[in-house]
Image 1 (cartoon, rainbow, N blue to C red):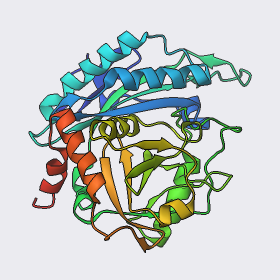
Image 2: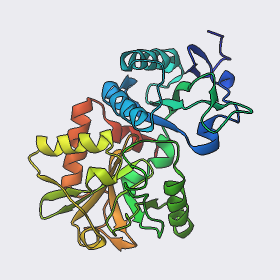
Image 3: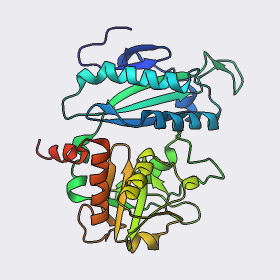
Image 4: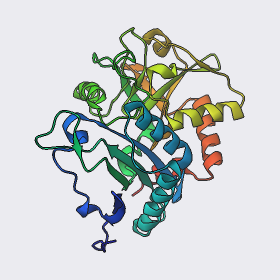
Length: 311
């Protein structure tokens, strides 16, 4: 292990833990050239990693779907992820937390080879990055604004959205369109049938008459935070229905919230420019879910965000 510069994070790269500045993927890597790679991402709460084994299981499902062998068992990936986190924890402030991610590409195209010939096997990276707490803090005070762009989510008959691949251009183009209208907005895409799906790293839930609704999993990446929100709903005895959700459902909802690895649960104040509920940061059921999530992880991540408004 090479010594990192003071204040520099380290990462796992093809068998070694090295300073981030030494993690250099060749420009002929298929993940760079084609998006031919998969990744996963969890976070820490109070410096403790959350549901790592569950994230790694999903990661290996993505790897199996795209037929990439990382050359490591799930248990080895879990152990190395913990090792990388431990090696970086000294860089965190007491109120800061990390994303912890794993990335595997198919490898580097063999120069002079045919389409599927690679040199040296897959590139494997495990990394940490600080959560964007300050830029997103206002969302917990004001609520989120969601827009639906014209770009449709890639349908499962073309490429399954259940695999978390590096090919994010579909979601990025949609988000760019939404942000051209409102730089603070978050995009949620429709599928090719006209039903709501997801955004970049975020799942959507609507609430109507005390029932929570969320899209069917074959049309979205079933986020671990999505699963956790469903678990929290069970804990507070609020029913959850998985079904196709359309624009009418969203526009007539009592509450809407998004889930993501970094945000956990965050309330939506407007959808397509229309006020949701009373337009507050979160409705009563959303607030109850958020508080239950805080209790579940034994860390006040809501306060962690709101504190950044005071900084």
